[in-house]
Amino acid sequence: MASPSDLLVLPGMSSELERVAVALRAAVVTDDPFFTELTSHLVNAGGKLIRPALAVAAGAIADPTSPVPQAVVHGGVAVELVQTGSLYHDDVMDEALTRRSVASVNARWGNLRAILAGDYLLAKASEIAASLGTEVAGLLAATIGRMCEGQVRELQTTFDVGRTEEQYVAAIEGKTASLFATAARIGALVVDLPRADVDSLTTFGHRFGMGFQVVDDILDVVATDEELGKPAGNDLAEGIYTFPAIRALQHPAVGDELGDLLGRPLDRSSVERARALVRTGDAVEEATSLARGHCIDAVSALDDLPDNAAVDHLRTMAIGLLDHIPR
Image (cartoon, rainbow, N blue to C red; front, side, top):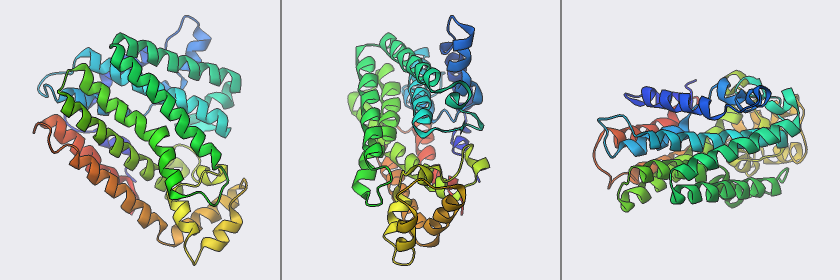
């Protein structure tokens, strides 16, 4: 199965993202060696850097023939620190044992240290954003707020087999798509692109983020632990019923059995049965269709942007996203 990180293996992107990776590793170093071990744990474990890739590609539109300005790199670091900090907090809430194929921070060092390390990463992101100007600082702060709102929306429907598609969409718009949109917007802002282009790139980021989350939710149902780098079916186990599960619950052939199974924490065998039921009907295909629609909308948002290699890169990212769903 292809990895979403394959989206980054495009001409010119690897060297730019290595600049982000270097700056990211430097940003998580603190005055205390033990605290640095905490804050750098998931950074050193590796990440897809999808959000920084959006910032870099958006910033490159101004001059696709030259390396992006260092401000774009800093913008990419800021959004990745927000993403990583949110993972620390998510793993505490989910009592997750692994992340990125390594022990989670909470599993290794405890919840209190994980929360504090996550807080530090968010604070560091805010510090970097402030260095990029008041608009970027305000944008990132508002985005962190929207991510919290999205997470709360999700928690409100935990173990609720009556969760609606509308509730699902509202949650992922906040917890996922908002940071994708912000990543693209920051990249565009720091290179002073025209406001119309900034808004188009923001729309692209939002739609791409929606598609990315739907694909991620599909993979939770169809992929293996090894492919995901975390336990497959964890959403079902934790009572987070995403679009594939919502659609499967409506399916006449499997909905009743799935509904009887869900609504409570699941052991491993029950998780695998629930995943099999979701895969039985048309739910995965319907979720794939939803993701495809978001990707098409993302590509359409680029129509009025300059015709250059950076825009082509964004277009390729959106089109290529669906290739990561196993056939």
